[in-house]
Image 1 (spheres, rainbow, N blue to C red):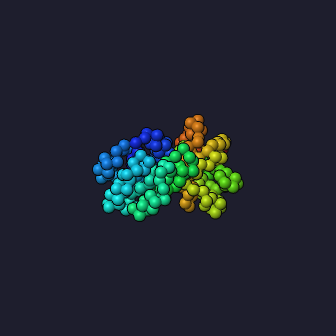
Image 2 (cartoon, helix red, strand yellow; image 1 turned 90 degrees about the vertical axis):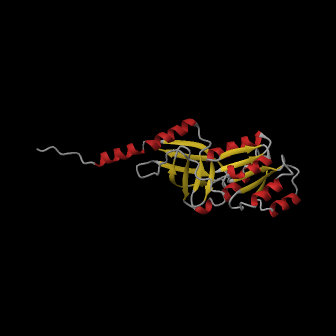
Image 3 (cartoon, helix red, strand yellow; image 1 turned 120 degrees about the vertical axis):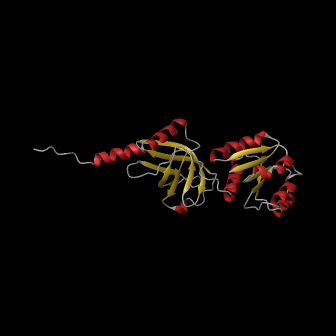
Length: 252
C-alpha cells in the first residue's frame, strides 16, 4: 500500500511512518500540494492524507481533481484537520466524496485508531508479516489468549498461523470479539511456544473471520524465541517420524 502525505510538517510523517510502515505501507510526503497533484499519475497512491491545517485552500481543488479520475474505492482521501475545520467545511468535503475526516493530533490514541480503522475499511493493507510462518500441527505446542480491552475477560481460541511478527487467531466464541476494532492495542496477551510463556501487547490489524495480530509490543528477545521455534518445526517433525519408526528386532 502506498500512502501519499501532503503536509508541511515532518512531525505528521513520523506518526504515519511509525504506525503504517510496520504494516507494509510505503510513505511518500509532498510539502507542496500543487506538485503532489501534478505527480498523482506517477506516484499512484492508494491513500492520500491531506493536511487541511497546512493547506486550507488547497484540499478542495485537490480532492475535486482526484475524483475526476479516481473514485472513493480506487483512492482513499482522508482530510487531517486542525481547530479551524468547521461543519460547513465538513459538508463540502462530503459533497466532494471524501473518505474520511480525522483530527491531525495523532498522538491521541483515539484519533490514531480512527485513522487506522478508516484506512482498513477502504484498503486491505495486507498481512504485515514478512517473517516465516508456522501453521501449528499436533507436534507444536502453541497457544494464545488475550484480555478483551473493554470487558477485561479472557478470550480463548486457536492459533491459525504464527510468525515472529504476529499471528492469526480464531476465537472460540466469535461474538465476544466482534466489537474489537482494527487498530486496537491489546495490552494483555499471552503466547505459549513450547515450554515458554510470553506476555506482551499487540495490535489488532484485522478482525474478520479471524483476528490478525501484529506483535508490536514484543521484545527483541521474545521475537527471537518465536522465530527459533517456528524455524525448528521441521526438526520436530523429523523427530516425531523417527520416534514412530519401530526399533529393529535382532534375530535370535
